[in-house]
Every structure is written in structure tokens, then in C-alpha cells.
Picture 1 (cartoon, rainbow, N blue to C red):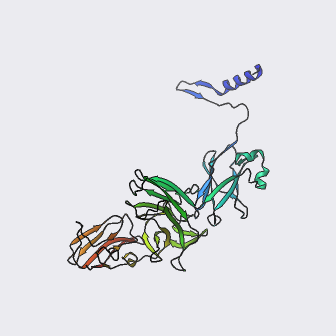
Picture 2 (cartoon, one colour):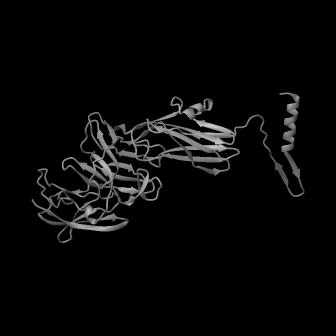
Picture 3 (cartoon, helix red, strand yellow):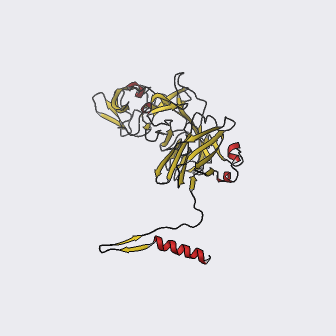
Length: 402
């Protein structure tokens, strides 16, 4: 460093740092001095490399520091051989020179599995930054959308996890920075038994739907399986499935458009292969995270439907129990019950409590609390349900025929 530069620095430091004394107080003024080039803009973006499942918007987030001007962010993207899209994203100022951009690639554009390619261009005054950073050296790749240097995202429709029985585990879909993943399966400890103490759990999203009727809209459909074909679990499995409400107004989005379907009326169904029909499971809707959670003792094909719930929606399909162990009418099942509601009460004709059913599976096999088969006759069931935000009591009769 030459003497002239040293003198300049010392002069600046002396000018910017001094102490002023008064009769009442002492004041200190500090000034930082920058020599050389200063970064005017910095861009931070956590890239997405893989997405499991479709149905929700893929959210791209970036955090930007811009010293002088509010940045403008442009994003280009393409799925497989679909039309190339470019859009200017909305930029929000957080504090001072810090900005955040959150841009969603619409769910109606993400219609199939494959490869999504995207790139970002951030402009603040004369300063331009790209993502991926390699585009800084060759900006023509952004304009020409050269896939060799862009960010690629693999979009798959399935995920697999090896879970040990003794400790349990989680199978989850990576959904692209959404509030929650499209799918989350929680397997508790000792929920299954296999010879080697573990099994591969697989969940696959299906895009070809089997509707309940021509008027029904399936919002999500998943098939679950294990490599060793476990037919029934020893402990309930908890499954959370996300549904599309991209504008968070409480009404479902289909094809990127808002519908009149209230999210509170969503329920999970499973496909009964024996009856070749959808049967209601229930589930608890979480509006804050746009998801519905339910528990099951078996794997199957599960789907989310919008249903116009009434008391009849919760009554058991069977009304007669013949508890002789022949596999026919040995029990009745109560479907569509939310796990956070009170238990089912089974009473005799005189109102005496015979049995409480408060955990999965919600079913009665004609036995009392001590495990003895009750006498033949008429019995009363009673429980509470949430219908359109109001707690209602559902009651009816069952018959035991030995």
C-alpha cells in the first residue's frame, strides 16, 4: 500500500471516528469505510431437485439483498415438452434491503411426471444475477433456455422407505417447499411383524381415478403397499394427505380454479375390492396446512372426496351381528369417524353401557368390556360427529343373533 493511500485511509478514519466532549455527556460517532468493490445484490435460493407427487403448486422461494433498488425477478420453466413459460414473480420487501420472492408453478401445469426445468433472472438497476449461478457466465443460456445449465427437477409419483418394526418410521413425499408434504405416513413402533424385522413401504399417487359417481371429484388418490404384502397392522398407521387450496380461502382448487367445495366437507375413502366400491374412512381436516389426517389398520387404495355429510353418512352399513366366527357378519364397522371425537357407546335396550369403542378400528364384534359375547337382542349405539362445523349426536340400533 503506497503512502498516499495510507494517508487517505488515516484521514478518513480520523474524520469518521472522533469523540466530542460537552459539559453534560460524551458522544461517539462511528463510520465504516469500504475500499474496493461492494456487492450490490446477493441472491439466495435453495434449489429443488426432486418432487414426489402432483396436485399442489410447486413453490420456488428466493431471498434477495439489494442495496439500492427493489429487484425484479423473472422465472422461466418447462415440464417435459410442454410450452415454455416465463413470468415475473411478486417480490415482497421484508426489512431494509432484504426481499423475498415466493413463486408457485401452478398445479394445473404439473399434470404428469417427468422433468421440470427452471431458471431465475434477478434484476436490480444495472446489476443482474441468475440462478443457477453458472448462467452468470453465459446469460444466453437463460434466453435460449439451454437445459445443459438450468436447474432440473425430477417429478416422480411414488416414494419408498425401509422401515424397521421395532422403531417405526416415516414415509414422506417431497412436495417442493409447500406448507406440508403431499403425503406423510407415520408407522409407529411394533406396528407389523416380519421375519427380518423390517419392510419396504411404498406410496404411489394415481392420476387415473375411479370415481364414486360421475359427479364426484377426487382431489388426491394414493395406493399403499409393502414389499412383504402385510394385510393388517398391529397398531394404527397415521396418514396425512394434502389437498389443493392454493389461495387459502377454505375452498378447494381444481385445475387451478377455486370451486364451491368447502374443505371442511372433505373425507377419506378406501377402495373395497371385495365389494368393488368406495367406503368412507373419515379423517380430520387441518385447514391451516391444507391436509387431512386419518388412521388405518390396513393398506389399500385411498382417496379424498368432497362429501355432503349428514347423520346417515356415519351410520354402519351392517345392522346385524352373528358372532360365530365364520367370517360373515362377525362385526359391524363404523366409518367416517374423526379420531379426536368421543368414543362409541354400545348400550343394551335398558340403557346399560355394554362396551366403549374409542380407538381404531372403530368396530363392534358383539362382545362386552370383559370380552364375552353378549346375549341375542337389540342394542343401541351412540356417538358424536362433526357435521359442517357442528357437533351432532348419531344413534341407532344393532341386532345380535347367535
